[in-house]
Length: 218
View (tube, rainbow, N blue to C red):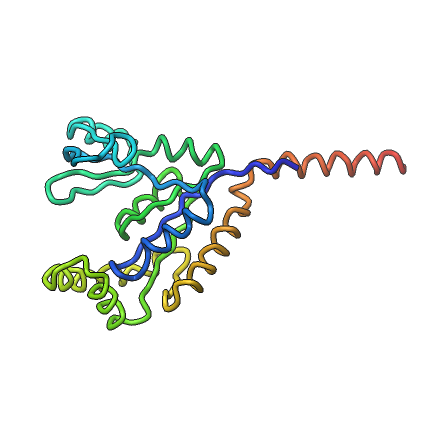
C-alpha cells in the first residue's frame, strides 16, 4: 500500500494570550515539514521583510482581482490594508502531502472552512482556563500597554463566542498537556480517508487478490 497522503490545512485560532502562538511554534519544532501559510497583503514591506517569505506583497488592484476570481482562501481589510491567503500554494502543498498551518481569527477560519479546500481543513480553537488567567498572561508577557491589553480583553469574548464553529477545542490550562493533545489530533486527522488518495487503489488490489483466490479454489 502506498504511504502517500494529502496534506492538512490546519487552522489554529484563539483570543490573544490563550497560547495559540506558542502551540504553533511547538508544532513546527515537532514536525519540521509543517509550514505556515504565507499571506498576501497590500501594505508596503517593512524593514527586513522579504517578499514571498514574510508576505506576498501585491498591489491593491491585483489583490481585488484575486478575490474576485476566487484565488483567496480568506481575506480581510485591516487598518486600511488588505490581507489574505492565496489558495494556489496551499493547494499545491496539500496535493504534495505537506500540511499547512494557519494562524487566523474566527472569520478567516470560517472563510477557509467554506472554501474549495474545505475537505482538508482541520480547525482547532484554543481556550484559556479562565478570563482572569487570560488577562494575567497578557500582563506578564510584557508586550503591550494597559490600553492595548484592555482592547485585547474586550475583543476576546467575541472571539471565544465562536468556539463552536471548530472541529476541536482545547482548554489550555497546561501547555505541555495541550501540546500532547494537539499532536494526537493532527496525527489522527492525517489518517482520514479523504487524506489517503491511495486507499481506493489499495482496496481494489485486495479485491482482485481475493477474486484470484476464489477462482483458484473454484
